[in-house]
Image (cartoon, rainbow, N blue to C red; front, side, top):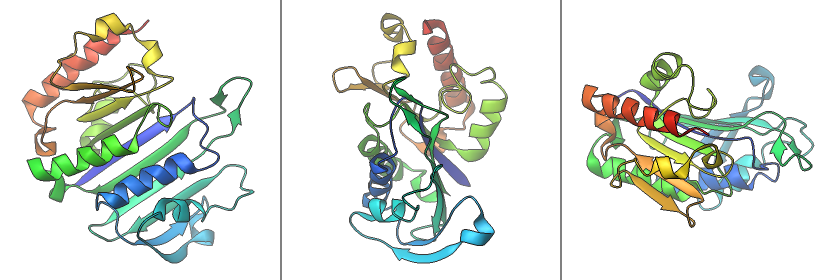
Length: 239
């Protein structure tokens, strides 16, 4: 398997204290998906590319501290080669308290080599990290899927998006919906989702949906057909 995409985003959570993306990075580190952070850069990659060596407990906060505190539009790209080559990007938008939402979109994208996570054991490690990273009070939408098929589905079968293209275009291998997104659906209609694929958390404030246990199966015809069927359940449940 080539690259895998893990994406998280929000229009309704304030990430400006940087704790949410730091927690996402910590979850990746604790699961062994991120080893040593070897480099970082800002928007202007050529001018701001810096060599670093960040690792161990609490690495997320140290990575996020690489963004200057007075940066008006905080953005960071980081990368490393352990345990396998990976990159992550974080973009943080201004939060408008009177509106209870950001002006723009908070984004977190982690891309990594997927070969070690194809089997059931590797997939379980990946899903454990996914559950540890995301919660209703930090994340509006998150997903994991093989990168090439993610992009194909987003621009193809999932166009138009269920809600918003950069967020919930459709159902992927692993999905999370939290505050700001779940409210867009009729909960009663979401009861049609298969119980063995769904986990409600925090008293129904968050929803994890995993279509199949093994990442390697995510691009098979049978699983893609199920993803598309589930996507239509969500489309029908839109308020």
